[in-house]
Image 1 (cartoon, rainbow, N blue to C red):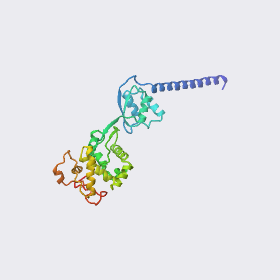
Image 2: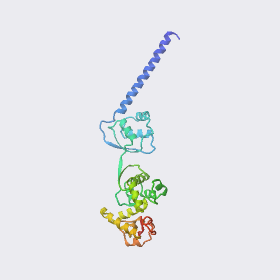
Image 3: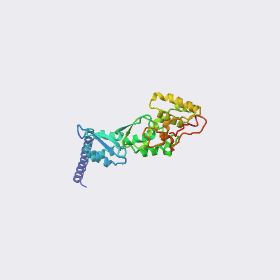
Image 4: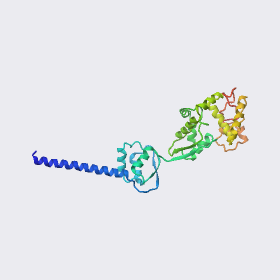
Length: 297
């Protein structure tokens, strides 16, 4: 190769290199402009949903279709550059076109989803809680109740009982829209465990009760009155009856055997053969029985 041809080749290679650098610089500039520029200077909040298992392609397409980003391909490239393609969290988000793609991605990665309030008042039994959960559009009440009676599931929650009656702690909770029945129940029971401290457990054992027995007794006391100020007196009466090996004679316990309970305890309920009888009617000490004379929780 003579000197002239070498010079020509050198010029061509230099041109290719400079062209590549120019193209790369332009691409970097465009990506920087894309990621740092919102689609609009102002914009109302839009509900954006990522369903479990949804692909990056679909997420990017939905963002573009809902007017939240300007370019689907650039967003996909940016997400992959950030190694976040598999880290987008499912849920319901409140996004705006006034946010940059960088800010939108940050929200999707942190799982800053819209939360829905679920308030469980004191005094509700398991059936009533299940209906409230269904009314709040989280899951069907029959699915909720089935899990609350599933022995294998109950065991995973560190509860020594045949059901979760009394362990679904009343409180105000906030859950994403896609929260499952299992997750809701687990949160309620975990809250119970946090409230029921080792100090309370020690006190329970000192009284001669198991945790399940004291929870059962607490449920009966709670159903006896809607006035919290009366509960200490009712508790005292029941404890004295147990010490004397007497029946509790607590009328509200009959409601636990009826799915169609409407809020009024009628005389025929006492005469009927209640299918549920959780409280023992045999025993000689408070720690081994809770005589109710009724069918209880």
